[in-house]
Amino acid sequence: MALRGRERFERTLVQGRRARSGPLAVAVAPGTDPEGSLRLGLAVRVSGKARAVRRNRLRRRLRAAASVAGLEGRDVVVRAGAEALGLDFQDLVDHFRRAVARAERSS
Image (cartoon, rainbow, N blue to C red):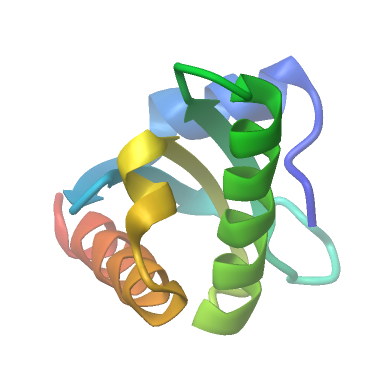
């Protein structure tokens, strides 16, 4: 499920289509996993007190949102900031789906 390796991460950013929805920015490329599952890369920025705790909480929420959003067969890089921590989980899933749909519609 993780998009491992700098080359794959950068390939998705360079070759993928990009879009935003709320506090999320995504880059979506056709999947490289032979099993057809979602490969997810996260770029999370959080500032302030307890940065590591908040950053890891956001990463866990983004991974959970990606698994619920039904995005199999894609490589996705998500950029998110601390604003995403304040969203309800369903809103986070909706922003995720919306951003991926916009990226796939763009040319």
